[in-house]
Length: 377
Image (tube, rainbow, N blue to C red; front, side, top):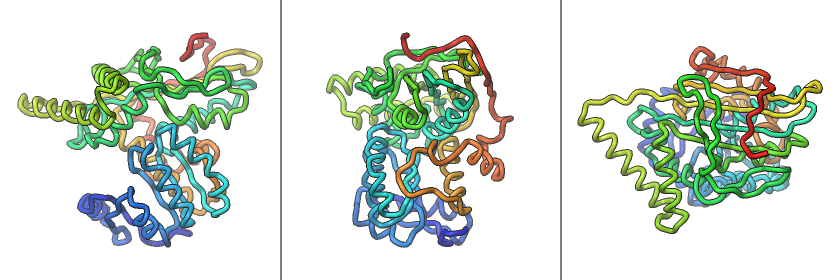
């Protein structure tokens, strides 16, 4: 594996879970270790001697910055799927420290952020002037025993969704970052069937932080999200209001959602109902001037791909990219400053990863003079 050690260590606070995962891979080069990511001393001891740390510990607003600081201190390269705004902004400020330590830090190489950044990077290429960028996603329910109601039963993922959909969130409008109410203003966007026109809501996501740094002159970057079916949006909106009013903390609201999900699963079990896969979608659009014409380059897709795979696979491709000897300069990077969509898809195709198989999704893309904006003009 080039510069890598021959050992891959799966680290988790739950050692049994880490061991089961490592054993399922059936490779003697993979081992397991109990590590508490909240214990700095444990991280320091574990990181020494490794070439790369992959951090998938949610929620990132709690676990990204401390882990990155240890990686920089111990001289270990780092990559994650961070999907929170606050740690992304804080980590970008550690660029000098990372360069001085001679390591790279890649923040947010998942589906969104990650693939979204890279597809937008491709969509903007023909434009002389970019005015607005829209990133939107719909997350569908999953059928696995550990993932119900569109989100993992793990409390951390639900806490993340509440964090990005309550209170005020950062967006980029009029050439500057501002705060707007989260998950309140809905925008209907045209996804392929079976989603069709679906309402998405402004959420806090890192693309609004990193893309304005990369795409010169862009005036507005919006990130919107939604859950399928729509009743899940209502649940998060109501509990988000309870968090805002002080009736719940994010942690206690997340526990309420876990309770609802388990009750739903029990009822379905009593009725003998089998949960069917539900659709997820991605909508990306760039508005601006191309060849003298004003219009929109767009990309939209709908599939039944589970969130866990669509998020983890781009991360794996980034690791392989580095393992093969590709140079990533020291410093803190967003995905769009390191990779192209071609880099990731080439590796994904070689390993037959699902997000690179066009037959498993319905995709529409192209140029349109009918503009769809995520904000009022």
